[in-house]
Length: 261
Image 1 (spheres, rainbow, N blue to C red):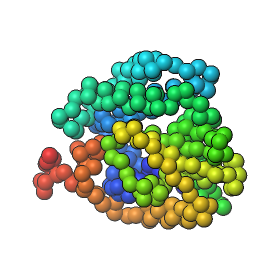
Image 2 (image 1 turned 30 degrees about the vertical axis):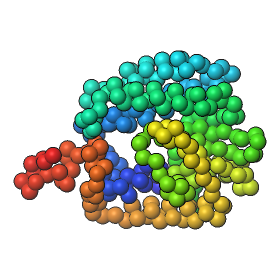
Image 3 (image 1 turned 30 degrees about the horizontal axis):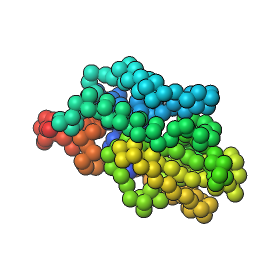
Image 4 (image 1 turned 180 degrees about the vertical axis):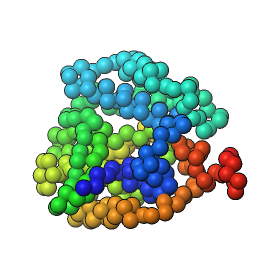
């Protein structure tokens, strides 16, 4: 049995060597996370807490949400977190999170979206024999009483805003929608919703059952490609600046083995 995640597959697609370091050799990096990852994690924690309160019939004030975010930021911030963009400081990133949360709060209050679960874990069999499995966590699952659709919500804190075409070909939430259909019925409609917090914008997408069947086959092929890989070459891109394995990557060594910037 092979258990994979969207993140695991994406890591291989981004850089096979990074995949090898993380998932095969299980190397613990010298620096485990960037400031962008910290920002994303803390905003997710704050939104998770907010909706837990809502599900308990409480609507916290925006001040309460920001206070929770601030406490989480301080509790989990590490002095060796990498800040690649030298024109920005920790405070700049913290303030970004405040802005994201304030905008989201004002747009969605009173949060009457019929939220069913927060951070819902899914495990999905890609084949009938259960040889290939996908696991993941849905940021928020809701059921829209007006449209009669299940909604899979995902929060993004990155600066990039993808085009609709890229969203319509996204693998992660589409895989999650297969799991939701398995739970509630293949005839159920599932709407995929990305909240791009840096742009105060949401983008939606849907898949047909035929598209989802094709996606399962494509994902199995991606996994087979990973499992047949023997060399695991590096792939040098602009994303290398944020890679936690940069200090041991041969892409950043000269012929003598000395590290280069």
